[in-house]
Length: 89
Image (cartoon, rainbow, N blue to C red; front, side, top):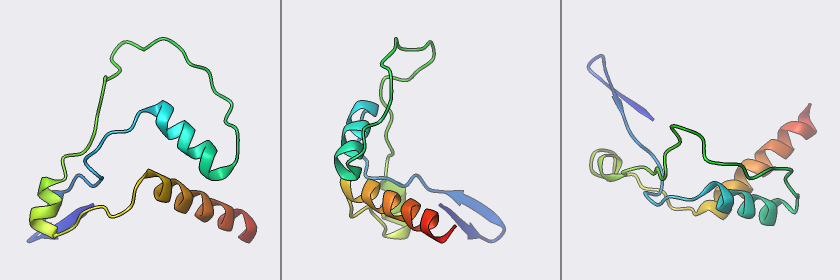
């Protein structure tokens, strides 16, 4: 999210502040959508980070904003949006 202030863009890191692994995201997606994903687990690639997550302090302090939904609700919302777009096409 970008907040404009006197011709200066401020960047905010939005998220829950808690990390989730790719395996966890796949598992939640499959559970929420009732769809099996086709994927392979391979070796870690050079340069891959071990963990990454957002520090939400700045967005809380400057915007008064924090995530209220968990990964299940986020994936469900995104999936339903995608299905709606497909129906409209």
